[in-house]
Length: 240
Picture 1 (cartoon, rainbow, N blue to C red):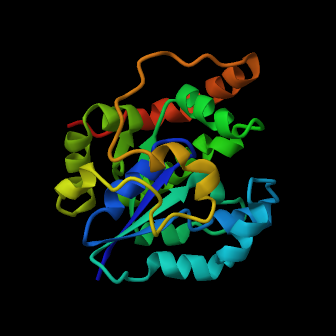
Picture 2: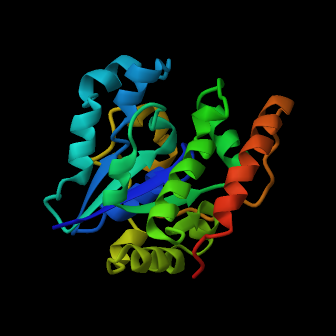
């Protein structure tokens, strides 16, 4: 049996670097955004490479859920999930069969990164509301808060936070999580050429950014709305 870890985050949240950290473990299978193509079909998003993503990936809800729950070929099955892919009207009960963890980042950092790649953005596109909904459901089922890690903490102390995360998920820490080879990975989604340019240049976690992000008035409004769910989850974040 494998430990099926679902890491829930929004986009532009060091989520790909986290996937690379787990994917570099010899005992891990990594899956990049299982529900991306499903979301494009059922929500109608006009995203870069939309047709290619739909053509290359499973789009059926039941089939995706079954694979998320199934044992992997290795002891750790790391699933990089985007919270905004969990669309209204689809039963999320299957999530409780996984080991759930939550990756958060300040809305200002997320929005600044997102709009460097794709100008059109709404609160729903960055997944903060859906992340809080999933967190609440998991916490209620567990009777306690599930693991939460903040991107700034990971960048500031990768080893310490990853050790804490592994303990919380019931697996051993592996030093291989701190470095990975430069360039594309075999488990990258087909969308990687559009979104992953900078992380392809990396061989490990970068230093946390020092300067504050400058946002337009419209983006500031979205950031203010996202602050409420962000700060609620941040209160439960793991510390090294």
